Picture: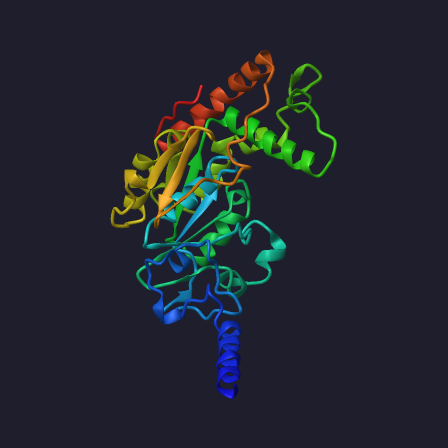
Length: 310
């Protein structure tokens, strides 16, 4: 009897001391998705980081644009075994209260990574922030920056769509997009979503602090339709070995966009991504596109590249 009681007590102690999901840090390796990508973030209080890892300043930052596909780009890059991606938007360089906390605080939000990996964070608010370029340069003047862009008019509608659903979920009143886009019979160019789509104005600010060669432009519209070519270009820009393959993606007919297949798992972006846009009055949409045309041409000239925006 005493022997059986002793065995039972030992079993109970083992059950509570080593939960089933616990994996010793020494058993993890850089290719393990728990540590090789940013979905893990910093190590939790109950799990020590793997030996040889550390939290490091980012080697590359996805600086924007908002509703341009920054989350898709980060999660697709996260497939690469040499990339450690920050799990959340940090808003360090664009929010004064966060920037005042200092670089050590910022580093503490980065994922644990191995020396052979590069750390990447994304905060789409950086692109339109007047202070972010100077602050990022003060941290690392040679950092590689990723800017993902899409049709400015479509970006405006996506911007509105996000706010629309957020207000619905918070049970707040919502207004038709036309009420925001039009004031006194004319296009409301002071609307924040329109201001965010004036890419050339924001890009000039970045080019005052970084050469164009340090800012890689990703075509967000192409990334949605055919991810691999855009990601191959990003791999080359970041000087990474080509590891992302066509087999890492599959088209989800229900959602209408590509999802990710990696480490034996399949995952799609959060349900808040790819929401259907509300219908927009055709006349208003034409006004919006006409307004952006000269601004788009200014951007093309600035970056020496043309996009297929109407």
